[in-house]
Image (cartoon, helix red, strand yellow):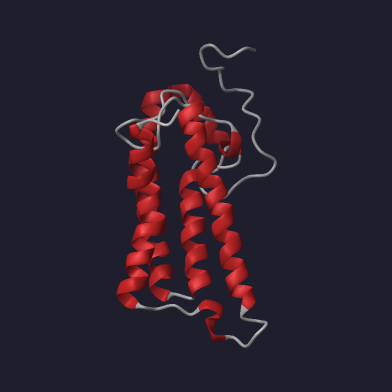
Length: 179
């Protein structure tokens, strides 16, 4: 069941980052070049690439929000974080699939709209998270989840998904999980 905390977390964080800010940028700057001014049918290539990248990012984002709520018993918001360490689904491929998802959406939007301001916003988003996550978020997760998070960090990359996915065999099961 969706709670007010869950809805607020999604609306205030990824929706604002991936939809509201890009719309404001496009509106204020007015820089849209779908197809990048290429002749048809070549103009369909950047549009298709942008849509595909944004769709993959949205898939990651929705999956991680759902896992945080169901498996983690919390939300993506700092005011209601997951109560348990989530290491399933897309978290088996990459430690930050939520940020990877939003970054994919932002890059997809920049490519689709052919917008330099959106691309610069994507770079800013990546830079801010590149500082915030290793500098603040990961140390906090180390303190919260201890050796389980340390083991997870050793086996799953921060940004670029790994293949094959990690099987998590060294992570102790959460309370109530069957073995």
